[in-house]
Image (cartoon, rainbow, N blue to C red; front, side):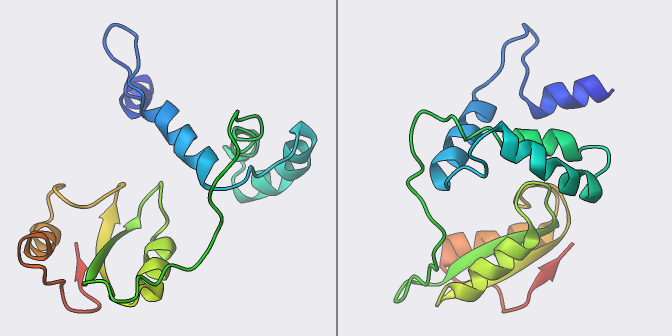
Length: 157
């Protein structure tokens, strides 16, 4: 069951080939921000703090952060505020238990956008739209079709 779950996550096809999701994800992440580490010694020094936070996965996650250190293209992004002054209403959807993009990131983005509205999905998974919540789907459909975001503070399950 765990192997089937991993194969599904990594988009492994029945013939043993893979889709490009993980490669694309690495490319996007490595171009977004400078690498976390300069060399393997940095990862080795960081591993104990990762282990403290996650005894099972910590070491692996610390070493995985070395991924972008040797990426062939330099990162083009840097952290900065995004306000989108003058933009039409912008809907930000955050899932409270998203394993890939923390809910705090959705809160922070909606707060810094001049016309941002946060729609909260109280649930699991990466993304919420089209995953079984009529509340989420109705709010997003209304926004996409009519340009009207949900009321501030709207929460769905």
